[in-house]
Length: 341
Ligand code: OGA
Ligand code: NI
Image 1 (cartoon, helix red, strand yellow):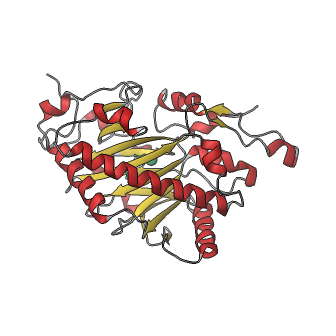
Image 2: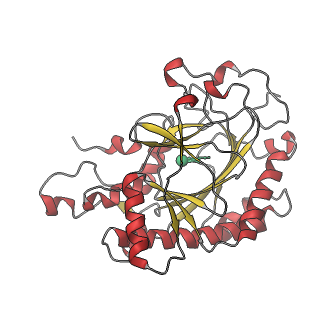
Image 3: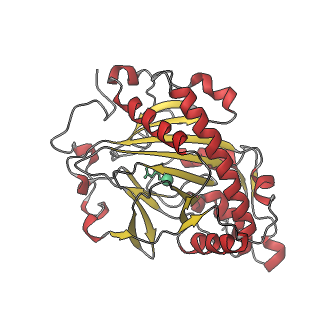
């Protein structure tokens, strides 16, 4: 049987041709700076105004920030990372039972990004889960390792609560009332991607994930502390975001960018990517909060406030999400496909 996954336990000595990017589209790792200053926001800060100012600054200038003292217990985070690591160490035959390249599946193990749509592969395997409502999706999650369901469930609950809190702050930092985001986004969906990037024989020729923006509302990323790989585009330069102990990396997705276009569009869903390395495998756990499928995403006040046509048309989240998965990852910003002419 042809092995579709990368995480087979076999090490590669050269990069298979299907992963090699053309010269114009390589990560140029030597010109990436290490970023000392993706803002770190202390969520335990008792001064709410100060917190909101910091958040606004971070969302404006980076679209990314890290949070510490976020309230998610260390044990829950540790358990999540451990079980993710154990999962990818399972024998390949066991993992292949969960393999699918159909993006409409609510639980699947896959590889690269969108195998059916892309021409060049990415050096990544990933497990994708739907996580809300938990009772609906938990039964279909992997039952091996045996502690998987319980550990991941706990992690999902904690991260969801954190995400809601951050969305509330984001709303407030835009001068919107505290419940604005909650109301517009409806009963938010939650998806998880457990990303596994095996050691790569020629990391300078390929990506773990090429540059993209996230199609959802808010992403909360847990990075493996030992290995860096996340890079963020700022002022046309790629910056490496080194993992910080006890922190999550948070970024604004396309939906929040579009919702707040009414406030002069200061918060952007920023391009980011994951690069790979030759020595060590890397794990990351991305939690995506998404508007409910029927949420109408459109900054309705825009026309009346400044008299101009909105840049993009409104859509339901279901429509947007289908469009996102109907294409290759490293194309234009998905929002561009909804532009008004
Ligand atoms: C993602 C993502 C970055 C990483 O899953 O959307 O951007 O570092 N991941 O794994
Ligand atoms: Ni992403």
